[in-house]
Each structure stands twice: as C-alpha cells, then as structure tokens.
Length: 141
Ligand code: TYD
Image 1 (cartoon, rainbow, N blue to C red):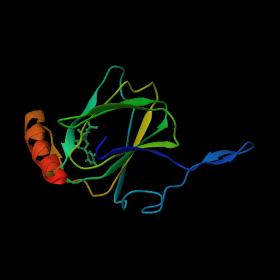
Image 2: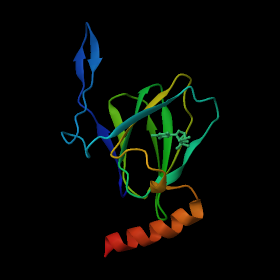
Image 3: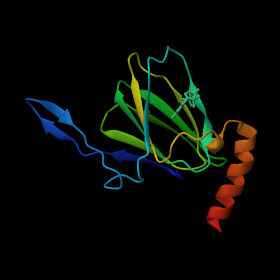
C-alpha cells in the first residue's frame, strides 16, 4: 500500500539468553528518529488513532502482545496484525490509521521522525479525504 510497508527486523537470538533487536536511525530504518512513545494498558475493545499526519513518518512495533492496525487512503485499505517484536509497520505521510484489538498487556512502541506537533495532525476524516486526494493526485503526476 502506498506510504505503508512492513519491516522484518534482524534479530540476535541466543538460545540461552534470548533475543535482541537493535534499530539505528537511517541504517535499515527508513527515517531519522526524533521521538519514541509507547501505548499500553489499553482496555479491552478500545480503538485509538483516528487521525493522519501531514508529514510525519512513523514505525509501529508491538513489542509485547498483539494489535491490529487499519491503514487507509481514499483508494486503499489494509489491516496489519503486529504480533511479533521483530515486525514493524512503517506509516508515512497522509495515511489514516486506527489501532484496535490490543491483546491484554500489549505494548505498542511508536518511533517517529519529528517531535510532537499538533499542527501536523488531521483528525477530521472528511478533511483528511480532501487533503489526501489532493496529496496522492499530485504524487502520481
Ligand atoms: P493521541 O494522539 O490522542 O493518541 P492516539 O492517536 O493513539 O489515540 O494522544 C494522546 C495524548 O497524548 C494527547 O493528549 C496528546 C499526547 N501526546 C503527547 O503529548 N506527545 C506525543 O508524542 C503523543 C503521540 C501524544
């Protein structure tokens, strides 16, 4: 899907000591890292997100448990289940996203390309559709 892709991160596995994954900005990672946040203790049945970003790049990693991510453009829709710490979902600009079906104890780690910027959010779906149609039309020119 345009501006959305799955990543499989290299895992350093040791049968005796367990697993380790290292992510370094711009090395096997699609953007420079400026912010990290995580979502956890999400009550059963809750759906979060319901927004797009104008310019932000993000990588979503479910470091414990599982969660489903709905990503949408005016033309496409995709559901990705994140259920392994070595899997990442990259979400680029102008993608509507909703996160749901958090398993009990799930921890969703989000790595972002910019500091928190309220003006980068589009929270109204109708406004999103208008801006996204324009954005993707220009991209395909
Ligand atoms: P919100 O964007 O509503 O979360 P979600 O899209 O997952 O439902 O963010 C929840 C609150 O956290 C809101 O008050 C803004 C605040 N927040 C920050 O202060 N910094 C951040 O980096 C993020 C992502 C959120």
